[in-house]
Image (tube, rainbow, N blue to C red; front, top):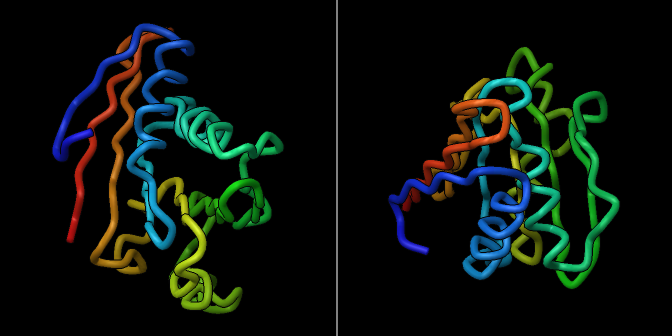
Length: 142
């Protein structure tokens, strides 16, 4: 997968296929941020990527803030939607999560607290273009 790039999928099967291709470029220590409207498919995409790494119990961490998964990789899954400020992240050990070079960190709604995001990250904007079609815009920040 090249960065930047835009991919459009027609349905959930297309999202799964795209997630599998994206999983090929995922490395331990990476931070992957997903932005998009409610219901655009952020959690489904993350669930599909993590399925590739033998993780099947993925759910939205909306109320927990973070979920931790272990499969063939370790993954953290954050949801910033309900957070009001960066202090809430620091209270749960945000820097410790970011410094874990053995895990991949996924963040939904990262645009809610942009100042908390590390400079080095991959951002994916998910846009619902109709009931089933999604556009994925991939950017890499070094």
